[in-house]
Length: 564
View 1 (cartoon, rainbow, N blue to C red):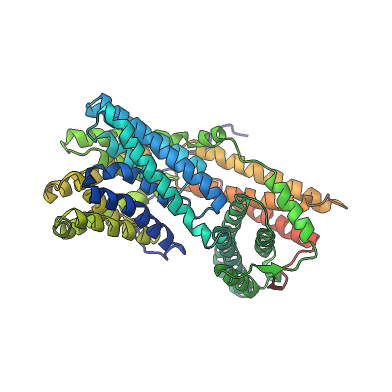
View 2: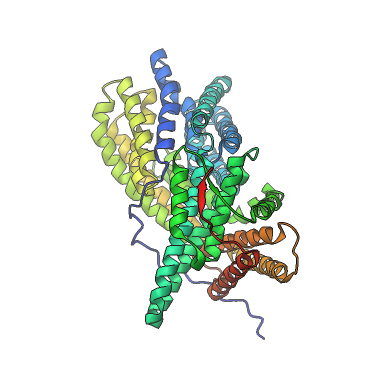
């Protein structure tokens, strides 16, 4: 047997088709859009009334925290938003103190790059987002190049903290009206995704016998739909596990997610219409639809067993992200220095552009780069059209910024480049809070920094390879195999312990979701070991067959539901 290392995967063709395709909006697009308008508007209008709009950059640091955690249940959202505000304050504190101690652009760019790398790693490890690290990088990089004295730092941080507290209140306010809204939405998404897979399974099973080509196409489509359904179910469990005390309505939501899991494992025995009906009932504010189940106690024992498993330590989650952090640090630093060499007066725009590119792999980073460049160039043209209106006075400037805040969040879920069309003029207008500037100079600097940041940032992604991606696939495959064997042993056991088979089934389902995410990330990476596609597909299919066997062993099926 040869001991030669597997040959690296060569550079793949970078995609252009579909990169700018406009998708459907997020089902809660209006929540972050309205939240950021309120969170930014109140402090900015207050400063406008006081005649101190020059301080708006510091309140923006806290206000933009309102963009985060909209998908989290309110108990978890309270904690997450508090950490976001503290993280923002820490970033701004480092930036302001550095700016007060040195005016060296070389040092400021280096600090900005290191901050962006740390923000990228922490946001990815904690999975806070969208919008992820880009807001932190935008605020901290701009703060680095703001004229500052050490004595001014405490007051400016106090403004950011006050706006951050207001953003926390804005983010938590919807809980007064619909306290269980996030977990209900997550459960509805899981039910709809399971229903979509069930419908596709039934349709393709009926037509797959026509030809080998049709069968292969149908199988690939089912695999994609099943992976999407499993990811939605996994997200629903994460939402439910993040809640506080388990009320009866939350236990019913857990049973509904179990029904979605069962549908993925046994689609032929599932009523997709029933799943969609439950999902529709969850969208409103009425009672949670109840689910009759003879094995409800065993199902929830399985949920209890999974709740008892803690999250991995933060240090373990940061380890695999080291290549992405190195890419970010190198790309942001080089982008900033190239911008300085070209004589651009605002190199932090190049830093932010580079920081915004880095995704899970090179292919996705390329796509984000194309979206960023297109969105920014169109956004610059929009700024040219709006600048005369914004220059009518400070009030017009503030109102234009608020309108672009709303537009960015309303559009960005459809495609990143659409959101960038509004983000770009907003960022240009924010620089004018201290005084109106020449539009031509601003536009030129923005265009140059966008192109420099995108080109240099992508080059850094190519140079810094992520060779850990192959190791992560091997680890994920091993995890799936162990979970499958454990589940198979419990299936064969005469009397598995209470909740044991349910917990094992759910553990296997979670391992399969992680395997798919890991394989997708590695598939878009360059210069690494070839992705074992066939092994991944075999592990997924045998794993899902084991899930189906576990469902039959438990005697579970999607039952008719009725209102509580």
